[in-house]
Length: 255
Image (cartoon, rainbow, N blue to C red; front, side, top):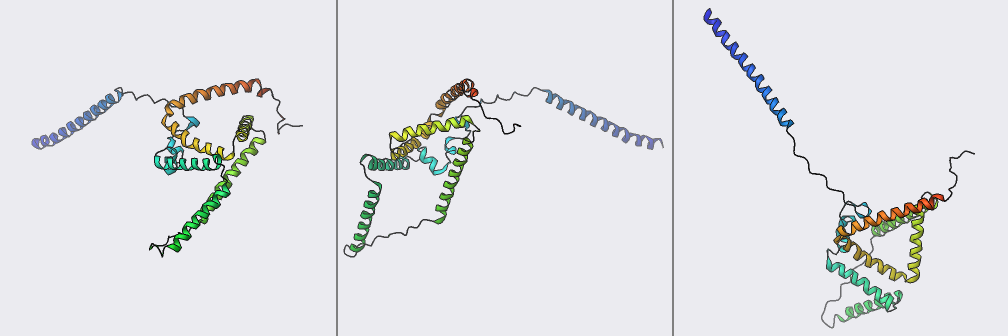
C-alpha cells in the first residue's frame, strides 16, 4: 500500500511542477513583450511639405491634359507629329492671313486639282500600263457627329448657366472677372483677325504646356507669390471700394 501511495503522489507532483513552469513561462513572455512594447520606436520621417501647384493640381501635367496621344502632342513627346501639326497650322495661317488667300477659293482650287489628277490618272492608266487609283469610300459616321453635337451642346449650356448665375448678382468677384475678360477679348479682337487669334491660341497650346512641364519647379513658386499679391490687392480693393457699394434688400426681409 505504501508503494502505491508513493507512486500516485509522484505524478501529482510532476503535474503541479509542469503547471508552475507553464505559468512562469507565460509571465516571462508577457513581461518580455511589455518590455519590447515599451522600447522607444524609431521616429517616423517628417511629412514632406505640400508643394503649391497652379490651379491646385495634384497630378502630373500629362494626366491633367487628358493623357494619351493628345497630351503627347501638346507636350512634344512625339516631336515629329507635334512639329507636323504646328507646321501645317502655320502654313494655313500664312496662306490665308499673309498671302491673302480666301477659304472658299482655296477649297475650290484644291478640289479642282484633286479631281483633275484622279480623272486623268483613271483614264490614262490603260495607256501607261498602270493600275487605276483606288479611291476609298469616305463616309462620316453618325455616332461621331452626334457625340460632337452633344459635347458642343453641353458646353454651351454650361456657359449660359454660368452667365445667368453671374447676371443674378450672386458673386461680384466673378462679375468683375468676366467683364474684364470680355473687355480684354474685345481689345484683342479689334487689333487682329479671328484667324490670327486662332493661330496664336495654337501657338500657346503647343508652347505653354511644354515649357511649364519642363520648368514647373521654377514657375510654381513665382505663381504662388503672384497669387498672394493679387489676393492682397483684391482684399484691399474689396475693403475700400466694393464693401461700400450699397446692396439691395434681401429676399427674406419682411415688410
